Image (cartoon, rainbow, N blue to C red; front, side):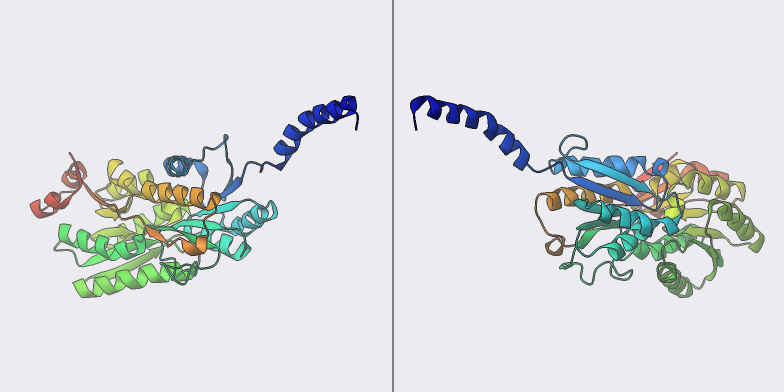
Length: 328
């Protein structure tokens, strides 16, 4: 090869190599985020998820793209939404809320799934083992189902003379989840010598009717079960409890902040942050089968003394002393 021809070849290579290198670089990974509720109800949770993702080295719009799917409490839409994310071959599916997690698991056995749920992931069929999930699914649980009986105990501590309590529940994924909650709260009610009235609701309008029915029935208080339906209705729940003068306890700290009597449960934003961190680990190459299901362990007890006074309830000092926050 003559010197002139050699220089031409080398010069041409210098131009083409960078283009070839760029072509071989992986495209920005896409994460599919699916939830059973409406976006406006989950702003804090999404912010916490993005924080956890960033802690793992990923920033939406920079080195990862997130496609959101919100079912707006139309759970019948979830299977098609999950199937669409599978069709798009996203890198990871983040299924937040129990109904979304169940739909995502049914849609694929290949694409990694990170769930966030307040239910027991074994009981609703997401995994068979918490420490070694196996398969393509792992995630974070708040274990709020296990806390429902504790909420009943706390309400009884506040209302020692009460003989009847209502459970406000919603079968928002399969009847199996609602049955687990009802069974565990019923067992706790029997132990405490309480009569339990179960009020199942399926829509926002049902919540108003349920409180009216509870007032007519004459129950002494209401325990609100964990449910996607109730996440965005904390202000409504607090307002209805005050309107009907029914002492009520729910999981979300926002419930007590909105005027609810007591809130007790896992901090949901912490669960979303952990889910974000797990998503980052999977994007880096970790396999869901090797990532044990995490549990959000931070539990808060918040008491609104202003609401207690309005309801004519004297909160025992022993309970105030155990509270993480007292609203006065």
